[in-house]
Length: 225
Image 1 (cartoon, rainbow, N blue to C red):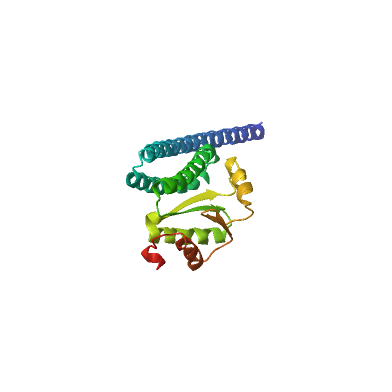
Image 2 (image 1 turned 90 degrees about the vertical axis):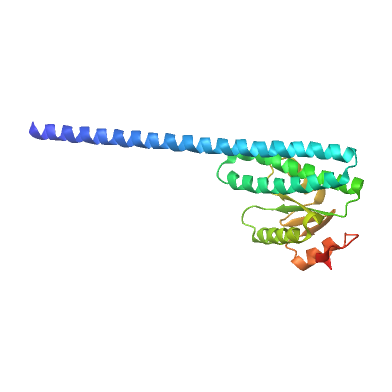
């Protein structure tokens, strides 16, 4: 009888210990999930405000173009594109942690393309001496994309408002515009650059892409000379 009593106690202790571990794990998991959800919700709200601001800037740009207020229009465009690039970069980092931000990423890609088209119209209406680049890249496992991105960032720093760059994730086919662009430009690999409708595939060295960019300017910036 003594042995049976000891075994029962051991089983009872084991059961209580198991329940304790389960409850602890559940509470930890619940807290972590709640924290994760709260964090993602905050990110979503912040990015949504950023996007709404960009949308408003876009509408303001259209108004400026209608009145042909070109200096103000172009200044707004340059600031908007810079803000869009920063917001898109942050969003891509967040997306690696949580796939629920896919819809926001779609909106940012559409914003990139909307501003790209707007930049083309601004150049025609205002006769701005600028060059636009549509840069297609892959966010993962693409060393050449990373290198090409660094080169374009450097050229942007040098040419400033004279060079407008719009970066598009080639792999993000959740947005229907990506397959459309793939077909339109016959895109098969990354990195690929569309420089004023001229396509360049693969990694392009800094001196080569600079030469091509500078060939489009009527008045050459100092960095082109």
